[in-house]
Image (cartoon, rainbow over all chains, first blue to last red; front, side):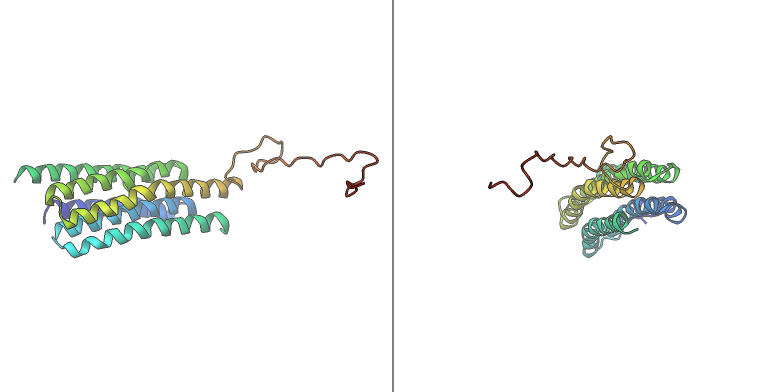
Length: 83
Length: 130
């Protein structure tokens, strides 16, 4: 277990407070926490790919970075207009 | 441990600290406006530090290139997403994202409607041609 994997585990632990906000906060609080969790998962994917030396898995964070932007916009526009 | 490893470890520790503190800030703040301030370090600052750590560890390789490509998407999309989130929060709270126009009782920020022009006597509407 190298430092990249340890950093990934620490960042996953940092997602726990955001999960608490998702569960207990209002709808907009949950959206903000969701955006934070998505960014944390992006970094975890990069760190695990580097930590386990799997170059093929570096494509996952690229896709997630693109989808994170689109999904976040879909969420906030939906909340703004209909909920 | 090489110098590259030490630098990468320091960068990873810094990124983890940024994420931990920002995550605690998201939990501690009161509303979505305040919480969104703590998303920016997680969405922009920490990924930059992680990408630097990958770059230091493995050099300019395909892995670091893909990491920086993903970081580019994050850096470009982050401010737009934060703006859209704030706009949605304000719209849900106030009914409109624009500031209030100053008219009493509105509070919706709608642009002021100009009063209809008063018609001159002897010139009914639609009688411009004489």
